[in-house]
Image (cartoon, rainbow, N blue to C red; front, side):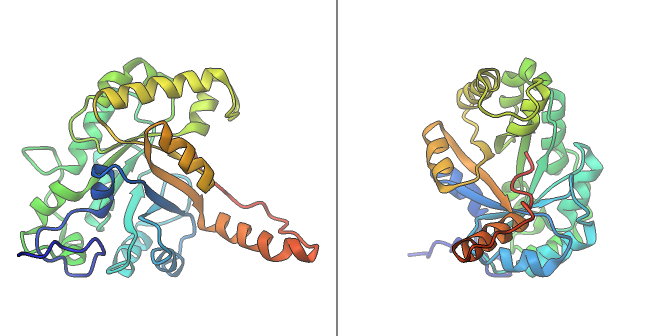
Amino acid sequence: MKQKPKMNTSAPVTGVWENPVKQLLREGKPAIGLVIYVNHVDVAAHAANLGFDFLWVEMEHTPVSLDTLHQIVLATRGLKAMPFARVPVNELWTAKRILDAGAIGAIFPFTNSAELARQAVSACKYPPLGRRGAGADLAGLRWAPPEGYYDFADRNVMVITVIEDARALDEIDEIAATPGIDVIFIGTSDLSFSLGLRGRQNEPKLQAAIDKIVAAAKKHNKPLGRPAATPEDIQRYMKDGFLFFMTCTELGLMTSGARQLLGPLGKSAVAPGPQTLL
C-alpha cells in the first residue's frame, strides 16, 4: 500500500503533497499561526519549530523585507509551520513577489469588493486559472516538487482574503462566493474602526457585522478565520465555525513569557508589546 505523505514538510517535497494548512481546514481542524513582526530570519526559524501550523509574515505593518521573507522561506524548510505572508496591498505585483520568494500562502488586506477578491485569486494562480507570471525559480528551489512547481503551486498556494472594512459588507456574499478563496479572515480591530467603534470589540454593531460575514462564508463553504489571543478564545470561536487563527506576534510571546517569569517575583514586563495586528 502506498504510504500517505507526512504533513511535516521535509524537503524536497516528494509524492503528491498537500499544504498541511489546507489539509487541516479540509478535515475541520484548527490551523493556528504566529505573526512574524521582526525583520530577522532567526526569529522566524525558531518560531516555525514551536508547534504553530503557519507563520503569518507581516509585510503590511512592519519593516519585514522581501529578502528576509525569502530567507524565512528557506530557513523553515523541513519545519512544521508553513510560511505565509501578508502583502501590503491587494495587487498582482505584490502577490507575485512574495509567492516567487516561496511563500505558500498569500494574505490580502482590505478585500472590500468582489473585484478585489477575484484579483487576489488571479494573482495566485497561473493561466488559465489566473494571471500569475512564470518566474518562480526561487519558489521552485524551496519546494522542488517532482510534478513541477506550476501545478504544485496552483494546488497548494492558499489565498486568504481579509475582511476589515465596512464597505466589504455590501458585497460580502459575492466575495465569499469567489472561487479559489481558501479562507475568509475577519480583521476584527480594523473592522471595528471602520464601523466607528475605535477598535472596541464588545459592541453589538461589530458583532452584527461579524455575523453577516460568517453567514456568507458558511453559505459558500469557505473556511473562516479571525484573531485569537488565548486557547479559550480559539475554543470559543471554533464553536462559531472559525478554524483559521492568527494569534499573537513573536514579541507578544516574549512579553507573555516575561510576565510569567517575573510576575511571581514581584516584577513585571513594562513594555506591553504587540499582541495582534487586526
